[in-house]
Length: 174
Image (tube, rainbow, N blue to C red; front, side):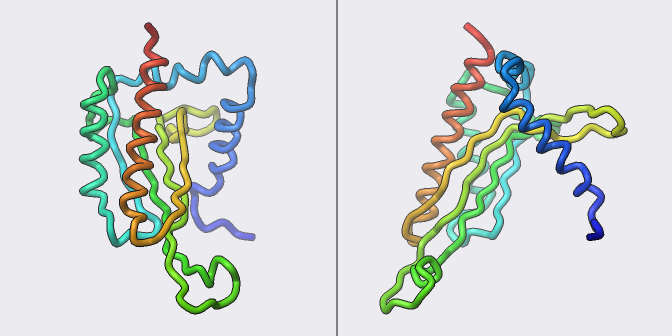
């Protein structure tokens, strides 16, 4: 199989680094270092696929406001190499698609992951440019009626940002 993207060869490295950070007992104390030395960050919001009820321009200010309210927290800086990346992958699925057969009066459901991660550049031996490495992440599953999925996604985002701020404060120490 031929790889068409240059970045696809680095995916195992990133996965390996992430798994090492999660599974090594000696790294447990060091995993907060990635958050402790992060005074500034930028916010990225991505949709895959696009959600018709939500836009990045309404989600990003919500995150910014939560970070400002939740001080102490990192300072927002759009030019920072450190990124707080939100990826919303909620899809509309009919109950027929979920069951595998058609039923009358089927309704639509919004199902999919909402992931919040902190990425920092890291240098890997043998690679000239720094690679983005996930130093913190959390994920929630949206699973409800499609008509309320936008509201559910926003609630999940609020919950995840609160979890990030709690871990950030824990990393900063007493």
